[in-house]
Image 1: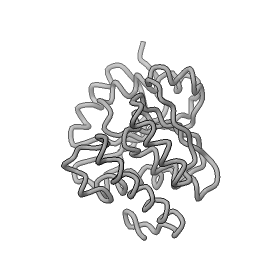
Image 2: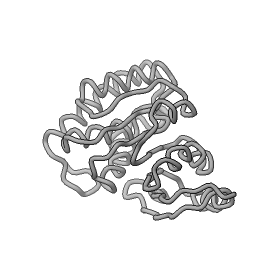
Image 3: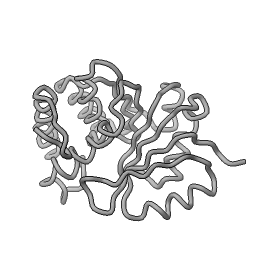
Length: 205
């Protein structure tokens, strides 16, 4: 199997197929993604989420904010299973979605844990991490607000955030409140979309 032009091992491919089957089963009962995108599961969601690990294929400790249907957190956890190190702490306050995520980690062998808590609480339950991901959660300023407590403790923290075509407006607005280094990665899946890689996050005083 290939995702985004890169070869995926047979083991990881099988795990992703297991996830896909679970997703399709659970999506009939709970709203995991916009219904209009269900028919594009592999391209719109799985391949899109795989870009995160492909950009940062290191065995680090991730926090995935607002994990919802498992994108990108479960996909990252599946790739980390092959590495054999690293983990993803998935933050999801909705109990039904959290139950789905726990089922996925267990049946797919993903490396991680699910925390059914609000994001504001997560900084106390998970005091340290190396990287943060988020997809379809909120505008950039809000995401940086969420990430700030971890950035204060971990100067080398990196953020990988999916953003749509309006990303530049969000970046400009966020620069009014935060200083940060930014690398823009053009999405290989969605036209006009990007993944923003952010480091050296500091709140302006």
